[in-house]
Image (cartoon, rainbow, N blue to C red; front, top):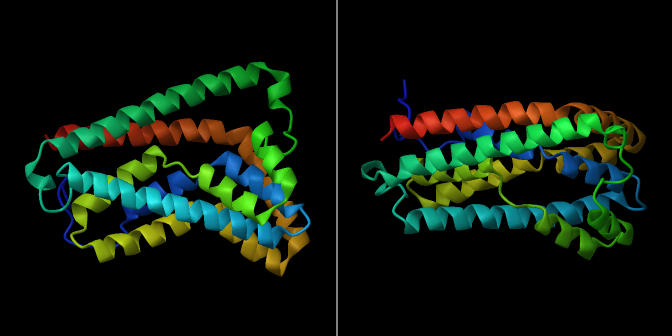
Length: 238
């Protein structure tokens, strides 16, 4: 059984990385954007544009985080003898808990406001809606790139990949799979639309309504759980 903070001997997409990827995929604005694009004139083209821009930028962020971790001595060669690595875990944990507090505060404010509880029209973000109204492939690529900032889950995953994976070729392969999971809410509806356009619109609409009602609560639990886990893992490795 692997101890907390101990290095992995393998280079696979571990269950822990898989959960981090799922956490990064839980992005309500993304699903709202997908729902809007499914009602546009050419959904496949626009979804592909968003996926290209978002995936490329997210992958680039992953490579950059790995380079930075190597630069500060947290790569595979030096991380196990360093005390800096555990503090990265603690920092990610603190960020996640702070995020959980902010989400919970927003959720309570939203529940007190009947206007905020009403179903959203469009994505719920005025700037994003203006870009969506353009219906341009180029703008979808730009939008996907701009909305692909790494989450605390991605940061935690990058640290694990840097520590546990010795070769860059394997690191890059893991990032490919990790980002495929992150963009589940784009490529799955895209594939489904090509098979059943009307059914996909209805299914995504139902999921979007459920997320509007429940995702903030779920997000608090996930972020808080990640934060506690990362802090414990970091402190146990000191």
